[in-house]
Image 1 (tube, rainbow, N blue to C red):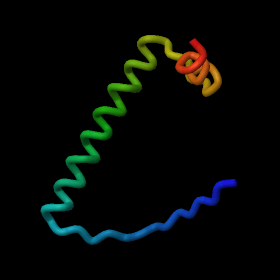
Image 2 (image 1 turned 30 degrees about the vertical axis):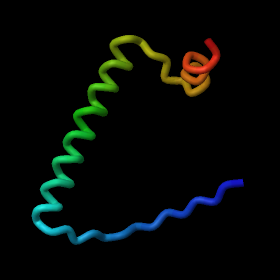
Image 3 (image 1 turned 90 degrees about the horizontal axis):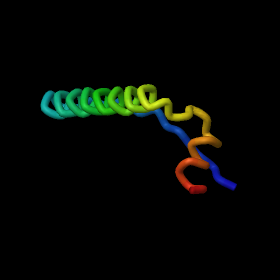
Image 4 (image 1 turned 180 degrees about the vertical axis):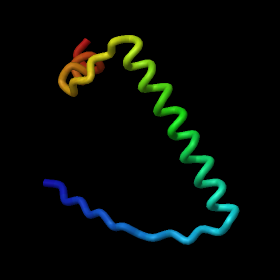
Amino acid sequence: MTLDRIAKVRLYPSEIHAIQLSDENQEYQRLANIVSEWVFNLGFPMNYLKINHALYKK
């Protein structure tokens, strides 16, 4: 059994840290778009069971 807790915390970063965080978010978004494009272009299955089977059952 697993218990998870989520806490919302408001951050007040310095100007330098805010810029770094923004840059990291932009890079994450860019990489997520690359992965999404790859998935859709190659017709990779979007079903958890099919993905799991493709990764671990072969």
